Image 1 (tube, rainbow, N blue to C red):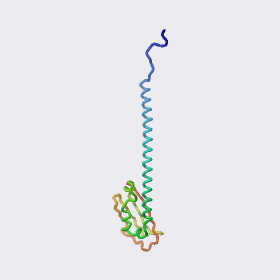
Image 2 (image 1 turned 45 degrees about the vertical axis):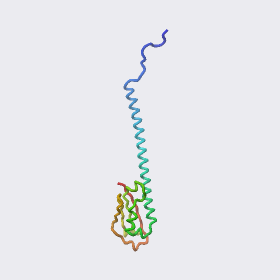
Image 3 (image 1 turned 135 degrees about the vertical axis):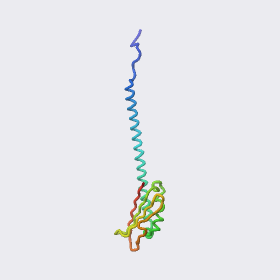
Length: 144
C-alpha cells in the first residue's frame, strides 16, 4: 500500500530568493560593523577630549603653583613651558599658547608658544611687569 505522493520532492528555494536573503544578511552585518566603528570613533574622541582637558588643567596647575616672579620673568616661563603639561601622548603633540597680561588692564602682554618639539618662543621677546600687582594667564592648546 502506497501512501502519499511518490514523486520527487519539490521543496527548496529559488535562486532569486537566496540572493535576496544573502543580500539582507550582508546589509545587516555591514550595518552592525558600521555602528561598531562609529562607537569606537566616539570612544576615541572622548578619550582625546579627556586628555586635552587634563593637559590644560595640568598646565594651569603648574602655572598656579608658580610664584609671581616666575610668571613675569621670560626665562622662568620658557623653562617652565619647555616640558609638556603631562606625560600623555596627546599633551606631547599639543601646541600650547600661554598669554600673560596685566590685570586689570591688558598692557603689558606677552604670549608664549610651545611647539611640538618643545621649543618655546615669546612675542614680544620681553615684557615689563615691574608695576604689576596681578597678572592674568590664559592657556590654550591646539592639535595639528
